[in-house]
Length: 115
Length: 110
Image 1 (cartoon, rainbow over the protein chains, first blue to last red):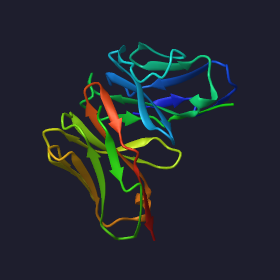
Image 2 (cartoon, rainbow over the protein chains, first blue to last red; image 1 turned 135 degrees about the vertical axis):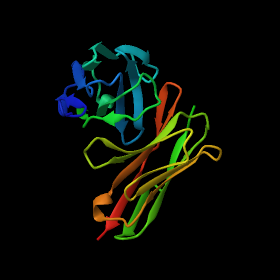
Image 3 (cartoon, chains in turn blue, red; image 1 turned 45 degrees about the vertical axis):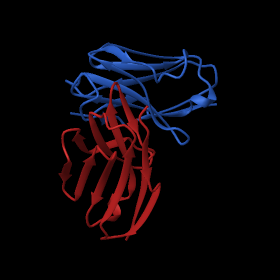
Image 4 (cartoon, rainbow over the protein chains, first blue to last red; image 1 turned 180 degrees about the horizontal axis):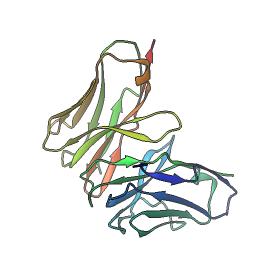
């Protein structure tokens, strides 16, 4: 298996633009997690899905952030409009079962820079 | 809310030394604890997962322990090597959340 796949690996955009980050979880995994990592705040869980359904989005910072999982093999995290303080590394992770009980496998991340 | 702390923030040791990394948490109601390794500019690699009913897990030169009552976990690395240099993070699975520590940056000097 190729592991969790994220695209793009790097994104540079200007303030106000829409940004879409993509994730393909490991085949057969039922849970998908979106994280954000910054020097100041460390790693923060933004939202997670079980069987394509959003379960907990309490970590989503603002309404400018939205996430979807239209099927078991694809998820997007969208920021509209983007702001410089959104600059961070965004990670996607997946795990076997539909809760926080099991091992997570992380993708390589998307480094977002908003100018 | 679960608070996860890792001390020290940075550690430098000579090659071959055994070392211990620490992780502490404030609420013992957890599902599991997971140790990760993160290399600069890279994602997180899972090292060990300890379920709440377990006391320890071992993989090669790594041994992780869990003491829920005291809110502590340790990651023991035996015979450290320069390739072990990375940031090590612990994460608590509890409720609908994963809570991460800020990590310990380890440097193993050849």
